[in-house]
Image 1 (cartoon, helix red, strand yellow):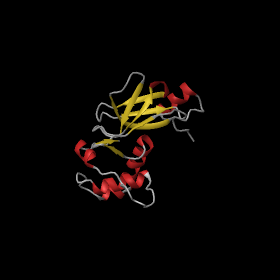
Image 2: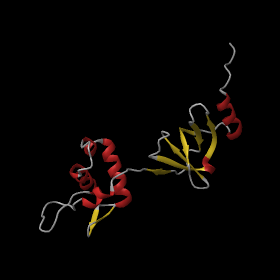
Image 3: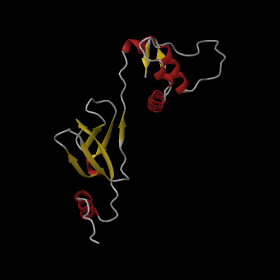
Image 4: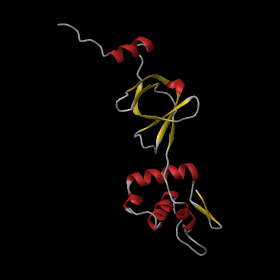
Length: 158
């Protein structure tokens, strides 16, 4: 029986990086980024993205038809996840701090505070988002990056 031909991309990766090459493949849309890095968005509409050092990209293929790009990345690379959420500034400024003076209740976690703030925010139209897995993912990220939501003299510290 005749052996099937290797896929051209796999043959190229094998030829350039050896049989141990096990690149991670990411597909998305390349957006503007700082020198030395590539930002890859899941959609052409922007929003969350992954920033990848150019030096970790083994190979890439771009299609003119869809505008998408497929990146082949070294597995041990450290990437930066950039997550954004658009919120009216007024909504942030009007939020009330949890647990005023005399509140003897148990200390709430950062995640609980952010969920509660989401539920009480008049600008959040879909309150189901506040308890959803996607909402919790966003709030965990905000907690990791910024800690507890704080309000200082009428202004919000994210």
